[in-house]
Image (cartoon, rainbow, N blue to C red):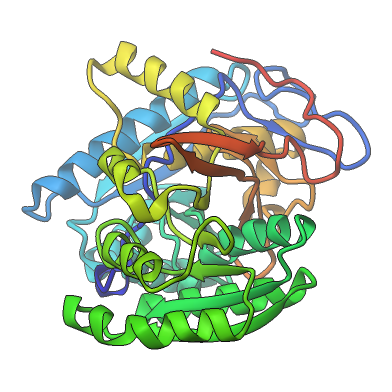
Length: 398
C-alpha cells in the first residue's frame, strides 16, 4: 500500500472493461454516438498527445505503456467521424521528462494530453503546460495532483467510498466503523470513508487503525474488535488491500468475535484481485465496488483478439480518455477540449462504465457493488447507466 504514494501509481485492480463507442451523455436530451457527425466537428484531425511510462528500464512500465497505447488505438478505431492524430511520447516514468514531453507535445500542436501515468509525472506535466490552455487527462487516481488543467481518470477512493457507503445506508447499515492502515494511502482512504459515511446519512460508530506490518495487525486487532462490538457497529469499512493487510486482518477480526454474519465487512479496494483472495475465510460475505464486470469481459475479449494477449489492468483508462476526447469533439468541436469543457455534468460512458470529471479535477465513476459468496463474486447492486437517472443512448456492445 505505501507504493500508492511512493510513485502515485494506480492501485485500481482489473479496470479493463469495454464498449464499442463512447457517447457524451446529456441530462436533458440524448447525446449522439461519437461515430456519428453532429455538425460541430469539421473533420480536422485532432492532435492528441499520449504520454506513457516506457523507457524507465522497468519491464512493468513498458507493459503499462503498451496496454495504454493499444487501448487508445482501439478507441480511435471506434470514433468513426472523428479523426485522431495520435502522437506518443515516452516519459520513462520520470516527472521531469514528463514535463519536457508535455511541453514538446504542445509545441508539436497537441490540443490535449492523455496521460501521463503516475501522479508525480502528471503534476509536473500539468504545470509545464498550464499557461497554454491545454488540459492533461492523467491516468493517476491520486486526487492530490488534480485541479487546474490536470484531470485524473483513475478510480478514486472518494468515488468508491461514496458508492459503498450509500449502498450500506440504504440497506439500513448506518453505524459504520472505519478501520485503516497507518500509511499515507490508509490516511487518504480513511478520510474518504469518513466523509462518505456522513454525507450519505450514516454515522462513524468507531475508528480503528494498525501499524502496517504483520505484528502491527496482530497487536492492534483485539482493540479494534472490542471497539467494533462495544460501539454496536453494523459494518466495518476497511482500507486494507489484498496485497497488504486484508487477508490477515479479516481472519483475525473474525477470530476475535467480529462475526461477518452480523457485522458487514466492506472494502475500499478490489477484493477479487488476485482471484486467490476469494478463497480467504475472512472475506466471505464482504462487499466491495468494481466496474461493470460484464463490460470488463467484453473489453478483455476484444483486446485479446486484437493483440493476442490480455490487457494491462489499467489499459481501459486510455480507451475511456481517448473516447471522451472523440465524444467532446463530435458534440462541441475542438474548443470543448480545454479544461472548462471537460466538466460536463452528465458525464460520459466508457469501457469502465459511466464517469464524469468534477470541477476540482477528480472524477466520479458509476460502480457496481459486489459480494463474495461461496468464493465467487456476485453483483448485488448493478452499476448505474447514467448520472441523470435515464439510460445512456447510443450505447453499443462489441
